[in-house]
Image (cartoon, rainbow, N blue to C red; front, side, top):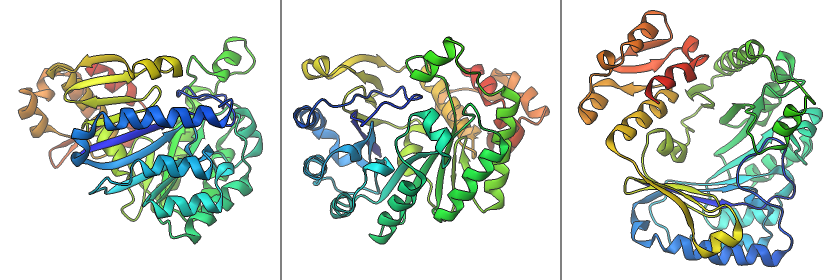
Length: 364
């Protein structure tokens, strides 16, 4: 099984925290030209199409496209067969009823909404342009048109937040009555507006200890409300785990097309050019063959992000390792309650989730 990721880089405005490849389009002609090159790149992978079982359209803001351009985009994907999960990212303020009907017509069956917070002040800090009403309207439109597999993204540890802020965001989330939540801690990425403000002492990041308490609160509160944590930042109920994202976490191959997109095909990891002029000349910017040792490192790090963890016997046989003896520090983490072994799987405990990066560094 392979996944297909498609990047739509266009946004109405640039959010302060975002370091994904994005730009504000100067006109509709820019979008149409991009879609033409995107289609050419997509069909350069035609020999792999039969192995594709998930499609994920991300951004940027895919739903910034008007009804005509959204139809052009989805029409180029209409002949894919055997798709188990077909996802698109949505910004609440860009969704219209006509766009929802187009998504339904073309078979999209999972929608991921970039909410980030229900608090107007937090949304302002993050540079978002939607309101709480936009969120509720978007979810209602989707539900009214038969969409049942819906995710929202939230962010915590934003300057000005406290535990009460997190509690309020979760209360609003529960009101939506949807089955999946991706809840990320704010990371100050270098090429972002927030990072620039931080470097100029315009705000202080949330203290690490407070951030840890926020994360603990999130995990415990979602558990009380019947949400199962299956990955460090992802929670679901009623069997709504993301099939596409598990391809990444299980270190399987996927095709990435579009400006700045990354992919992993035939043991080669690649990244596309992130400037339109360069992308139109040559899609790929970098390529790296992933050898067995690198695959092992990636599989350990990605696998431990999953709450189920690593199948010890499977990994040992696949890579000719004895991970518990080859990495003696692992036993210390087990003895100290940060890792546990259940039914042959090595996994992070609740306590271990708080220091996951320290454990991942063993394999870098």
